[in-house]
Amino acid sequence: MTSSKQLNKTSKFLSLVLRHEPEAIELALDKNGWANIDALISKANDSDEANPLDHALIQEVVSTSDKKRFIISDDGQNIRANQGHSINVDLQLKPATPPEFLYHGTATRFLDSILQEGLKPQQRQHVHLSTDIEIATNVGQRYGKPVILTIKSLLMNEQGFMFYLSENGVWLTKSVPGIYINNH
Ligand code: HQG
Image: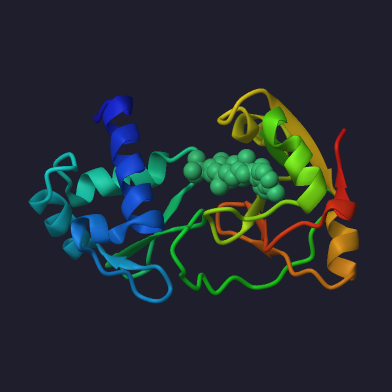
């Protein structure tokens, strides 16, 4: 059994190379964000940054990830992050109809700017939204005192904005104009 500290460290490492900086270990992702697992293991173990990585540890991180951050391809050869990328990958997400409201957790210090210019994806490819207020609160408190924004997602969708549901249940959209945001 691997310790949760070790799993957490490896999960952060996988997030870094599969979402943000594959070049940190000279790893190639395909256009859909997949990395070959053998290549990932060998490149990770050649770099100083990583814990020793092997198939069993990767499998354990994937299956114990609370947010199901990663997915292994059906043939077992490849792995990718389900969402959260800053690099430009095509996850081939299908447009989906969102519920009437979705929630976005942020920090109070961002509020003025968000209400003025809307929600932007910042470093990532999408704005991340949740059906669950508790999850949104946890997301928001990563940056300070959390505040939950209610997004009129169905109305947005009816007015032409596309929504996508990631493999791990996160709702994604390109941006949210201020008129669709309620600050309570
Ligand atoms: C804020 C984690 C000022 C936005 C989580 C957020 C999530 C603005 C921050 C996932 C703004 C970006 C994503 C504007 C947006 N002015 N601030 N106009 N528009 N912001 O981390 O949604 O654990 O890129 O509110 O669980 O916090 O990594 O996005 O506070 O699902 O798997 O700019 O990351 O997942 O922060 O988090 P992020 P996020 P993992």
